[in-house]
Image 1 (tube, rainbow, N blue to C red):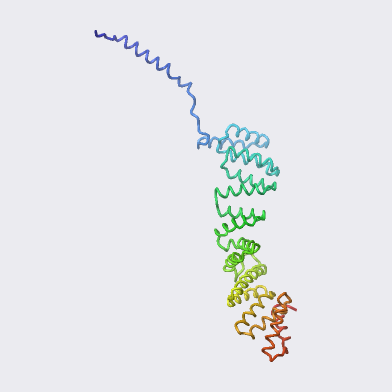
Image 2 (image 1 turned 90 degrees about the vertical axis):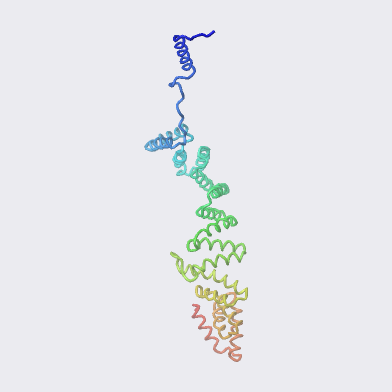
Length: 336
């Protein structure tokens, strides 16, 4: 049997279905509002405006309270690092380092990737004398972002801590990143540390680099008299190394540079004389032995002995006229 649905029945069915749909879906006014991501650009602009307004508060106590309230209400805001800096700064000015450390540590939980908070902690730990903790944090910062500026900072930190091994590690990294005209002070310090360690090849390597740039000229803003001391020190070690390798030509070249920078260095005159003597130039060795002899330094007695030996050999066993040679030597090295 076929049954027909009347028009009125269709209307009733449609109305019933519509009511069912309305009952199954919540009213539009009862739906939850769309949540704005706390780190979105939109929210950042709103937070920025809010914090800017707070910072206009003239009363420090009220401004601090409002900033604290902002942190409570917006713990995930991109403005947290800035707000943290504003809240920590008064305690930094008071040198209340323990308070700085506790606040920075708490703020790190909200902004763990903020480098400013890490640097604040490093400075605070350093100020309290906890240099080990400061260095630990600083090395973490450097490893996360190894820059040449960071290497310089790390080298300076470990130099103050008198940790030579760590100093060399970072100083050598830094020195390699800068031209010698900029890095020579650090390179000289590296050479000094290696000298303490008796690592002469490393000392010579670094001194040679400095002298290649400033062996015949003075660095900017450095007094020549002061640089002469550095120049004499470097060339003296380089000359001694060459002499030990029986390279008299190179040794003489370097010792002459020492004598030019520091005329009262008896050792320089002595070894120039020794090289001339070894090369068969006895006459040429005499003036240098004389200079070494008149300076009255450790090596001077030996220089006097060789001077008399060579002088006698050139003057039929006589020392007549030697006083004149010694007088001239005194004049040339500036000894009265």
